[in-house]
Length: 329
Image 1: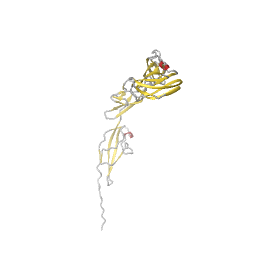
Image 2: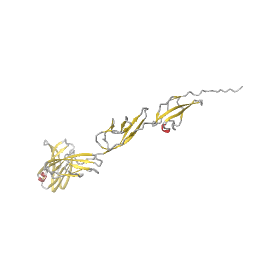
Image 3: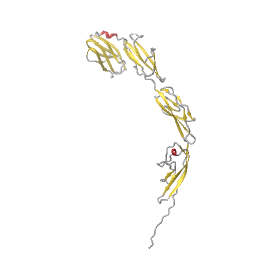
Image 4: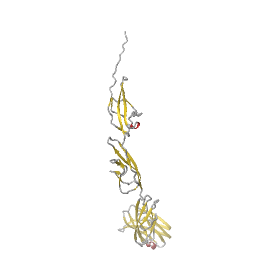
């Protein structure tokens, strides 16, 4: 018998490649999906190794993209489509002058062409609030009529304010002093005392045995940024410490305190002391064990369990008592 063979004749596959919307030159590479059926291969100068349309490979202009689809019989159809790559708008932004941290908000200008949008840390509705020190990137974005966008970026330097770190409000004996240190590298100083040095020593001059000195300083950094600081120094009459024979240089600090208190003194001879603390109503809230002191002496006690308020520290020794006021806050 004669051999019989079956020959299948297949049509070329029907392929549709729909128009692709214009692409901006800075568009992220993407897979073209406007084809039927899926699963074919794209070729052309704008197609990268991942099969994506990458406008950065070709630049502005019309680009021919070919799409080839092969069916199960090996028959292939290729369809071409033109994809237009559009340029992005030319955008510029003027340099921004340095500012000081926490200075007044700034209305941003200098972006061209007009009609764009400013963005960045601290920017809202075109206004920059310099709350954070450092170099801050400010962007200016413009979109053209085709929907292509471009952004210009300028850094604005926000100079940090000087640091005010000296002691805040404190209480001292009338014969003591405290050094306030406002040192900031390269800064200029103006104290309420008239001093222009970074450090000043404050004593009870002008206020007597009982008085208050309100000390302020204006610190201007090397970049022209200004920060003010203040300290209230209260002086109290501590002459009563001499009523305990042989005791001198008695200090109770910090005062005001938030809990931990240090007592320092010098005993010329061996002396037994006891410390008692009473509140403003006269109720005893703390009592130490007997303290055997001789020479320079220092001890600490924790008052963090006491409510905020005024207390009186009574130091008993050699049959006499010295009382000092202390504030817990």
